[in-house]
Length: 151
Image (cartoon, rainbow, N blue to C red; front, side, top):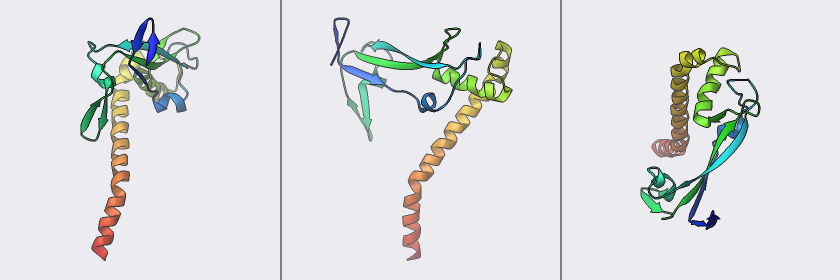
């Protein structure tokens, strides 16, 4: 349990996306390299996203991990020059547009023109990755079935 401003926290949640760790990201306003930053928020049982942090999925069962307040550490990007704060999903879209345009600094018009394209591209890439993971998981099973058929 953690002490937070006189209240006892019963849970703690922290998760950082891989893309934040492995890639360089640049500010769409000034072009400076973004820095990783974090903020902490308290999720209470009355918040709509409480179930996301208070339960753990084990197979088909949901296990309640805690029944009190949960301290959630959320990561985002912060520009050291212009102090702009950008959440990771938004930065993914901006990064795609920056790459397509070949420029770190983007106007509002450029962002609006290419936003749908970038979001579609990200969802397609997610779907391909998921299909590859499924294929990777199924491959040993398929090999075993083919061996049984041959023998």
